[in-house]
Length: 115
Length: 112
Image (tube, rainbow over all chains, first blue to last red):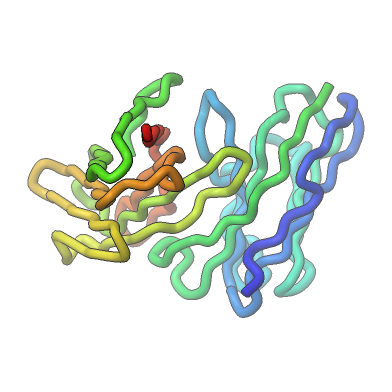
């Protein structure tokens, strides 16, 4: 069975550029999460969706970050303009049922480097 | 999960031995716990979970123990194999209105 699919796997771009990260959740899952992982802060929840609706975006660092989920099989996380401190690994995860009372299944992430 | 700073604690185990990875939590309202395994360059992989109404849960070669009295969670891996080498995270939900909080992880190194 296909797991959570993220693209691109790696992204290197210059500061000021727009970055778009993509995620396809596991088919049938109704909650989707975007996380960021850094050495300094570990794994942090940025935003999550339930039935395609954003529920909690309190973890989104700034207005430069935005996320959308136009349908049940696709989500994007956009950073505009990007800054060097945004460099991190960004993970997408999905689950079925209660968003935080079931295992979340993660993709393999996008490693983002902002120069 | 606890915050243990920038340095990942490392557990070194010989192949074939049993491994025990520990996690402390501070919130007595935490009611759900998950263990994840993360290999280099990959996303966290679900291993096993446990709800607070249980003390022990077993999977294939893994056992999770929950001690609510001392707020301690452990992951036991039987007959550790080289493929078990990875960083292991615990995550907790601090009650019904909460999200998951992830610990910083423990690196497991399996020596031959």
